[in-house]
Image (cartoon, rainbow, N blue to C red):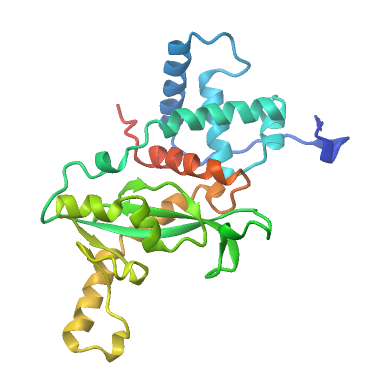
Length: 268
């Protein structure tokens, strides 16, 4: 069996369906489906082409595998525009559950510490989009600041800013430094956040040339910050975060939706 792919760019092309697996827990799909069900019930939504479970699966395939909407639509028996609307609706619902900054820091106070670092999300912007061009990586990207617990659990993903934004500038713009200072929470950050002051601790420059106690500090600092890399690895395991083809205005919402998927409790 073949399915016509009726998009202007590939008029007359054919898609051949095949069986595939999605590497997410079945309970996670059910949890997203339940959120969709509650949303539909609250809005008294009429009949849909896909049920809640299938719509949840559609959105998770998009995030996990980064397939185009034409491919998604063909796989689920939908038009490209309908697939886009279903995914867009699901991302709106998920992102609405993402915690704010103050909520993310609830329960933390003096004597506690968090790990703050920035990551860059690749995009397909063109050369004219200068604000999104990262000179460090020589590519167009979006900057996201991540706050993690000492064990690497993501607490907060910030709104995405243009790729050329410095990490310290982004952290200040999102009020991360001020919020942690107010609560006297220690921040462990890399050298990109040097100069933030307050409760921010960064490693010393020129590690090998520093006094012994500075070298010990750097080693301990690196050891404590290492779990924070787990949050980046988990975020980038969703392939849409390896190359976002959507509008840069939508990347923030996508990151927030993935944060909810990473941290939601669907055991009950």
